[in-house]
Length: 111
Image 1: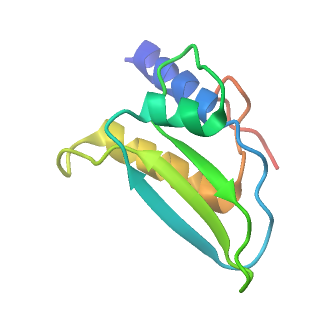
Image 2 (image 1 turned 90 degrees about the vertical axis):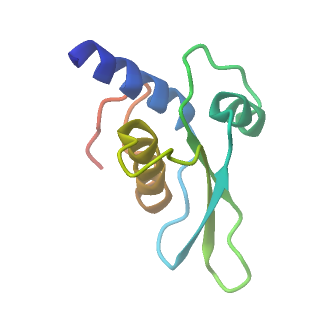
């Protein structure tokens, strides 16, 4: 079980290497439901990933009204018990609000 958790963290961390978002103000979140998050995230980042990507988030420029726009690329959970996909969605949502909060190996870092 611990090994699976480590693999998931490493896979998520690889996808979350986006630039730090601007701070303050409202956040608009757009969820792109993708069937192939690995392929979608490689396309968005412009680089090939070694580890399997479960989802990613990408910051766009702030809108004219000052709202920050964060797009999440993650698959739709198959049910309310689909913990892997729900955890991926929550993980990427946390990046939309808090930016980069782990290192490249998946360990949480202090701000």
